[in-house]
Structure formats: C-alpha cells, structure tokens
Image 1: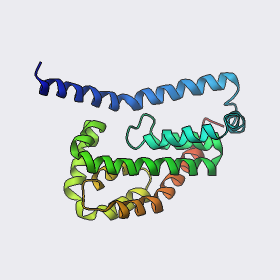
Image 2 (image 1 turned 135 degrees about the vertical axis):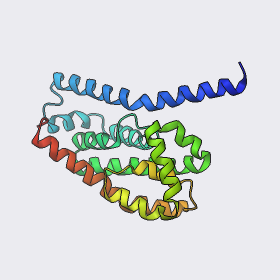
Image 3 (image 1 turned 180 degrees about the vertical axis):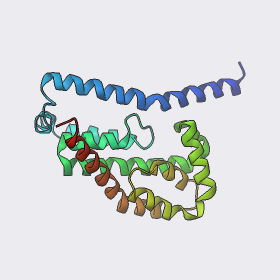
Image 4 (image 1 turned 90 degrees about the vertical axis):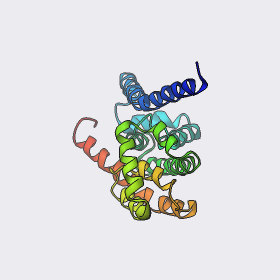
Amino acid sequence: MEPKVRARRKFVFQQKLIQLAPVFGVAALILITIHLRRLGVFASPQDLQAFIKQFGSFAVVVFILVQGIQPIIPFIPGGIATVVGMLMFGNIPGILYSYIGLVIGEFGLFLLSRRYGPRFAQLILSGKNYQTFEKALHRHTKKIRRLLIVCFIFPFLPDDIICLVAGMTDLSFKEYAKIVLIFKLWSVASYGYLIVFVLDKTILF
C-alpha cells in the first residue's frame, strides 16, 4: 500500500473517530446519570454536590481538563458539560470552572488552527460544520473580531467554528485572547442558566 493511501486512510479513521466522539460522550453521560440516580446520588443537585465534595480539588481539576478538551474534541457538547458542572459544584463555581476550561480550550483551538490550517479543521469538524467553516473563512475574515464577539454574546451560535476561522486570519493571539477572556464568561453563564431554568421547569427537579 502506498504511503499516501495509508496516510489518507489513517486521516479518515481519525476524522470519523473524532466526529463520533459526541455520540459516545452523550451516551456515557446518560448511563452515568442513570447509575447515579439508582444509587440515590442524583436525587437532587444538593445530593450530587455532597457526593462530588468527597473528591475535593481533584474533581475540579478533572472537570476543567474535560472542558479544556471540549472546543477541540467535543466528546460532550460544551453547553451540556457546563450544566453538569453547575449541578456538580453549584451554579457560580460550575460556571467559573467551565469558563476557565473553555478559555484554555479555545486558546488551544486557535493555536492548532494557526499551526495546521484547514486540514486540522477538516479533521475535527463534520461535513456540514466544515462547510460552515469554509463559508465563514471566505466571507468573514475581515470582520472576524466582530463575528467572534457576536458569537460569544449569543451563546447558541457556533463560536468554536469561528475560533477556528480566527486562527487562520491575521488576528493576533493577544487580541483574540482579549475577546475570549472578556466575552466567554457571558456566553457560558447565559447558556448554563438558560438550560438549568428549562430543566428546572421540566424534567430534572
């Protein structure tokens, strides 16, 4: 087998594995939730927080690391992980830990995008999201600062895709970091509180 063919097959396999990660992540989260509920740990947020406190700072570090991976390999959608953090640690600590992890992850996403270019985007994005990425790359490069801010202000917009685009523009890392640090907290908090509010009115509590 020629090296190019072998490399292509390896790339496709890695691409599929990364793109299937959210499916496995959500399935694992559901199974863990069911198991904890059967143990009585997840009977209420207070019970869950009491359980998590047994692990001390280790639980916080692991959660921040998980959130740091989310923008690059979203094996659990970041918004869901934020809500899980709010249930685990309380609303404000959960949001702050999510913010720290997601900021680290989006810094990494920007740097990887700048280093490896569109091929990296193709590796981690689904076909549909890659099309969105290409359109944003060609149409919005000159307006990337404004687009980043808009995506963070409205938390349901694809900010991770725009962070990928930003890495391939002339936007400096310093300026990018400033935008993320200022606006990401609003994005995390508004999304988290909205989802918790919906859950509070429906199935969870």
